[in-house]
Length: 217
Image (cartoon, rainbow, N blue to C red; front, side, top):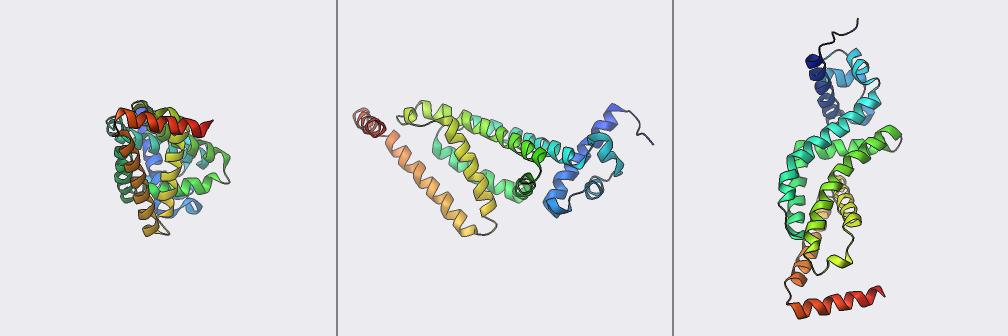
C-alpha cells in the first residue's frame, strides 16, 4: 500500500529514518546496518526506507549529510569567534570530547569503513567532511592573514591537513588513548611556538620572514 502523501508526515518520517540510520551506525556498525535495523531504530515500517530513499545506500548518504550539517551548525558560531591557532586547537580538543561522548566519532568511523567499498557512501562522506573543512578554512584564512607567518602557509591545504589530523586522532583514540592525548599535546606545543613568533617585535618578525623566504628560494 502506498503511504499517504502528507508532506509534513513524510518529512517527519524521513527525519526519523535519517536519525535511525545514524543511531544504527553508532550502535551496530556498518556491517549490521540494513533496512530492517534502521526501520526498527526509527520505529517505522521497513518499506518506508525504500519509499523515501530508494535504497539503504542512498539513505546512509543522506544521513551522513544530515548528521554533518547538524554538527557544523552546532559549532559554526563558536568557530567564527576563534581568533588564533591556539584557540582553534583548544576548540578542536573540546569538540573532540563532545563528539566522542555523543557517539559521532563512532558514526564517522563506520562511514569511513563503508566508504572503502561503496562509492556512493564515499562521495557522501567526502561531502560531509567538506562542510567541516570549509569552516576550518575560514578560521585559518582569518587568523593567518594577521600573522607574520601567513604568507608562508596555504590555508586551503592546511585546513584539509587539520581536518584529516583530527579525523585520524578521533579514530586512533579507540586503540591508543594515551597516544592520542600526546598527539593533541604536541599540537598545542606547536601552537605555542607560533604564538611566540607572532608576539615578537617588528624587527624580529622581519628577520623571521626573511629567513623563511630564503628557505623557499
